[in-house]
Amino acid sequence: VAEWEGRASDPLAYMVARLTPTQAQALRDTNPTVVIEGGNQSGKSLTAALDCCLFALNRHPARSWPEDGPPQIWYSTATYDLFAEAHWPHFLRHLLYPGESIHVLPTRRIEGVAWMRPGVPKALRFCNGAEMLVKSYDQGEGLFQAARPALVVVDEECGGSCSRIRINA
Image 1 (cartoon, rainbow, N blue to C red):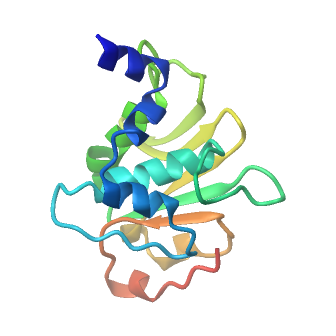
Image 2: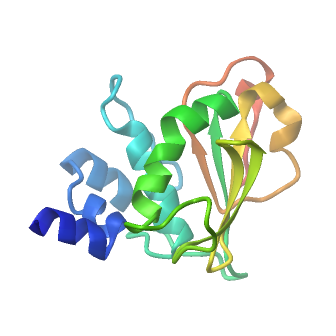
């Protein structure tokens, strides 16, 4: 019962309190580039999702918002479908309170979602104005040009022309 009550009071804080020492260290790292390595199912994507959520909500232990206001975040992965299957569930689990639904917006934290197609998000807007864009390597390097995101997560390896992208965040 106490475990459920902890999750109900704040699902994001509940998960952060249960991180492994390595995951917690990655979130506290103040270096501009943080590399999280591990085997399959070791918590890399969970840590990356929590990094995005904490930053977007301005609750990150090591990163502050830019001075010009709410940040734009890029979450980059091989395909939109991979994001929907492997990464999106982390965001839903930690951003939504019990009883909330991504299909009934706004929630306490999420203002809106732009969908590629049902079940496959391409953008998430937080109630505080922060925005997370999903970037897919299969869309090519042009998708990664022009903007200046405040945080970039590169989850999964990228090959081809996307491996030459330089991000000046």
